[in-house]
Amino acid sequence: MMSETAIEKNALTAARDTLATVFAPWIAALEIEALAADETGVDFCLPENRDLAHAGGVICGQATASAADTCAVAALSAANGRFRTCTTVDMTTHFIRPLKPGPVAIRVEVLSNGRRMAYVRVEMRAEGDARLAFTATGAYAYLDG
Image (tube, rainbow, N blue to C red):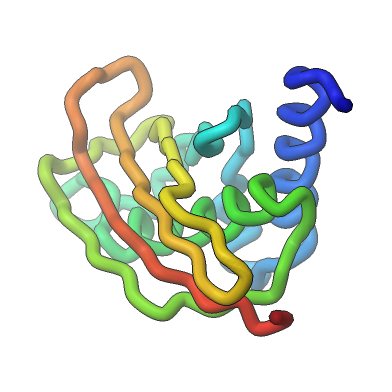
């Protein structure tokens, strides 16, 4: 039996490999980093990128929704130990407070991971700020099963 540390390391490797190889170039340009994995999910960072801010001076909702969907797929890869081809079936987003340009801490929890469907919860906060800024729940259908 693998140690918990080895399992977490393999999960993190799967998430990082997915971020590096699966997504369209404009998603790769977000430079999302997988930081840590555990038995319930994965922690990510969306680094500071002034190109994501709209005229109001905050990170646009399209960028946070894209980051949420991207991190969700990478977290599912971590849970599975590899990338499984999947598609987003549903994503419900809640924009709670504006995110100023700067690093964003993202946590994805895998709520359910079955043979054909998976469900996740995503939370985002400005790095170093305990206040929740964005949440999403998502449903994903696996296309390989």
